[in-house]
Length: 447
Image 1: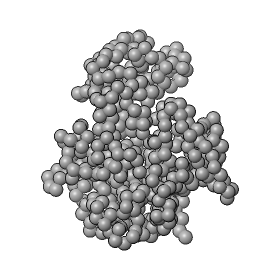
Image 2: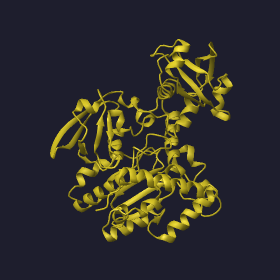
Image 3: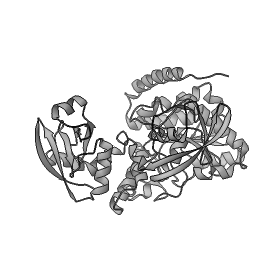
Image 4: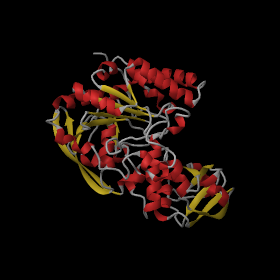
């Protein structure tokens, strides 16, 4: 059996990512989209952008389906480009056992079925023709970096896990019910109010095809804008979606399914009794094929405390543990890396991007460790993203108080507070330190 080591994955990724970037730089976005379709259809290994056709073939042949949702062209996920996946000596024979479909946009996407972290630009669904989901794949904790979260070996493990589940289907159907969620606010992306006037349920057949595409992150943006306008508070599962396993203290091996590399001290995972070397096989009876499956369970857990039953293998023995989540546990997650944070900043900080200051800067300003100190890394210049600029904020200013709060230590905490305590149109005052002098400013919160 041929094995792909993490080092080999990184070497392959690095080389092909560089090559792909050089080749892509000479093409416009429109040219990239058209070339991608021509290549995929000419090679014939993947069904291009036709989920219903894949479903029909799978029903006829009794095969499972692998659906890859990937924005085209996406430079950030080129490391897991389908061309690289197709040629991998481990993945290729696994993929050949599936009906394979590439979805390059979310126009008309069935959101009752395809629910995932919309800030991902590479998401994989493993399912059957009935719409029963075996598992998901695709995790990220940084805007542009994937290393440490996913790998080709990890994708291979998820594919093999799905094949095993498919062989046992339908005897295991009951354990898979929880892998489908409740219907979202709208059945497909273009039905959301903020998208309905701009997009159709299909890509344009001619003209500017690239501009007609609804990207994954736009669904999340549309969700947040909907709640911003129709609710007093944004639900925490919307503001902090698909928490990374590290939030509960789990550092997972990206090359395997459910393998724990380490457990953070004093974390929920440690208190549950989880250890390095354990293999998580099920969460609340749902089979775990990847970190994305763990995120799915966390996404649907209660914000104000919850208990998650874990089935693990330790030293060849199966054990049952319970992961207890403290009240407000989601707020430990970092949302600042997400594409959706751009619109959250428009709503909560007037378009400004903030970063935590260094200990040296704290000493210089006389700020205690438990007091706010966030530097304006970037101040938006145009439209609704220029509200902070119009209020007088400049890049380099250090935010030391926001709406009377001096304990908002991260940009994530700042965003959450602003969104949950101020409605569009309300005024908010804040204090900044500029060159050693304090200044009071005020801005209007945006929708």
